[in-house]
Image (cartoon, rainbow, N blue to C red; front, side, top):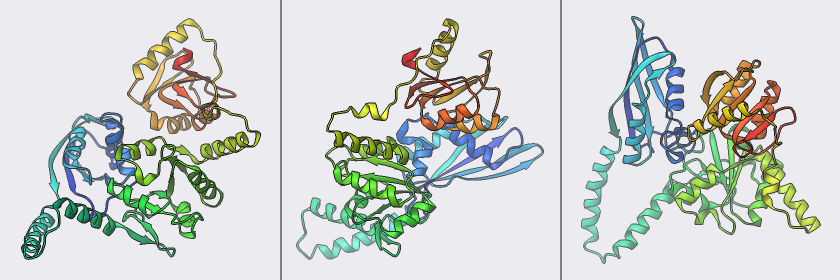
Length: 399
């Protein structure tokens, strides 16, 4: 997960917690992530904000006395003022932690930049006074020059290869690998501190070493050169995810919304490898082939009883937008409901006794393999990227 260094956080959310029972710190952190998931939309998803370094490590301090737990939650933020306030307010919807009733209240949001701002204002007055005796440039030019200088100042040189990088590379658990210095600047400007550039077409030893220590996302231009870089990374580094700029665009040209969209739609390194192999085959035989047919295997049609079809359909409809999942036994009784992000872990922990799962998400190869290992009969999802050999993969379109 991404972390925020004290020097780069702008606000700190201070929240008090009161719990009618005994819980541990992991229970509190799990409730914060689990009960706010899907509440504020993709742009303010806590896991994604932490992964990109815009929300820091959540610190929890609890003290148990007389069978009750009290404490505090501290969340550093580099979001803007309004977004930080929204994240803080979302904590107050948490009403249970573990099996216990809980009450969370945001005490205050601290602006850690206040002292820095005072220094900047006083220093700016001095600088402005000295500038008045000289020819002043156009104000817009001045603002552009200062903005560019600030972004350049954030760039560091990382590793023995002295690669252009953001200030969050060393402390982040996940890094974004881009092609060049201009790409690093573009992502820094949009709030991503965990960025590092290849600085060429060959993969430096620094990148190879980092890929073995951290989760890695390759973010390349939407052209043939970007594909060549992905091939090189897949060959020599331990790449985890891949994403591209839109066709014909470079990473440095992307607006903030386009950057976030590209990072949200990233694919696994294995998927990228299969896609590249499929494209190579297409080029060799010189026959057009729709890319969608390579990326999305068709699921098997499954004949269901009318009552099964009706019940699965209603469950799936009720889950729309919740990012939740139902776990069912062979009598179609609900054994439990969990967040989609915890579905694989829950299946592995239960191991047996699950007849079907119904969830708000896409059935991918990893989840289907987990379901097959647990002898699950049906996987019911909004969409699917694969079909199963020993499990029936059912989507909204097949119900």
